[in-house]
Image (cartoon, rainbow, N blue to C red; front, side, top):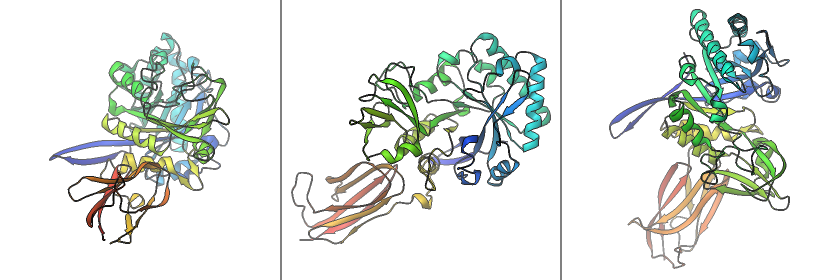
Length: 448
């Protein structure tokens, strides 16, 4: 029914099989600059076309020039599913009325089926932000149950997904015990953890609370709430990853700020990294931020490295997939670095694959050498990189590189000295190059 990536891994003779989804919200306002043929379908399994919304009588409204059979055809021709998204922030005003009675719900459901049939959608995503009381909670449950019954009767292969909050502030108004019986998967909005409403300039989407114990939460606390408090199976949850950050007038992370936060897309902030803005890694939150002392500003961001951490978290916690808000936000000069990080860290590494795009190779020249050798490598995506020299017994001789590096070619010289500054003895040595979660080891000879 759904396009899933089924991966088999052999660990100590035990065969494990699991599925991976990569969900990408595709908003109408990016369609002109980021056409559907630019979506990387080697990564994206489900395109969530945003936004349509109901009025108070069950009629369907949507952005102008949004719906197009050609968009849906492009998605299908590339082997992915496309769902029509209803709601979104600012477009959810019709939900309370349109799900309030069986009669209006029936009108809305019939209109959903008509529009999906007309344009060839594979189902819908509900992004009601947010039900606010027990009446709306119960009406939402009735609507989803009746929608599932209607889909099963007409198009049983159609998907129902739902964007959901990750704390009890709004989560209390969702009956997940009933909803999970009808919803195929949930898209956890594990972002907007901090913003203008919080007391400090915190991360947009920290993997773990920063500072530790921060009551605003994190990705991990949100997933814990959904799985362990609300009882949603982990395989039904896609962890949300923002392709945007937030700029604050603040001296540093987790400090007071003035004014409001300003959203910054990846394609707006990527060029600032190490270009007048200091890149800072927060080991508590496992996410970076940018800092400008001259402007007294910070920008909370996600990048290739934080996505690699979140990919590992999704795999180790048996989550069903990743969710992106939003496709096109990382598109820079034909490149999509955040999508590439997912491909490498979530799909490629976890599957034990070796995509050519992410092959690694390092050489040193001259080899043999007697005074200096140069290590040459090219980092295809932003990642953690280390380069360490060992003797044949496995003892560390010299650590040449141990840092997060942006993509691009590098040449690292070494003059045959140890970490303490002594000249090594003649002989055979090993060097180990770690790039993200991959590594390569080679030999070299030092002559005297």
